[in-house]
Image (cartoon, rainbow, N blue to C red; front, side, top):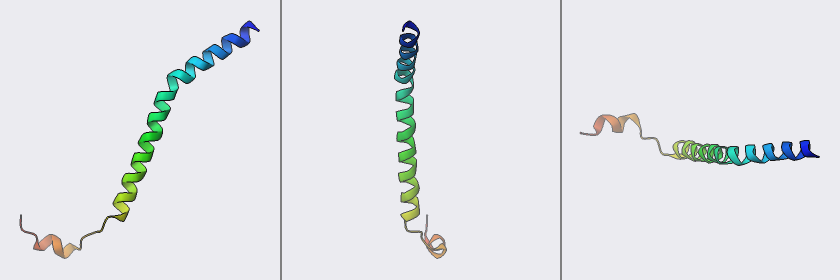
Length: 55
């Protein structure tokens, strides 16, 4: 029984330490997915407008 409690304690500590990192990775992946989708849906100007723009 003591070995099982030790194993469970180590597992809980590991989850507590790893959870914020895993949550952050999931958040970053979601943001990256949203950025990729926004770039895909953005209107692309024609090459001709690049030459007519005056800086």
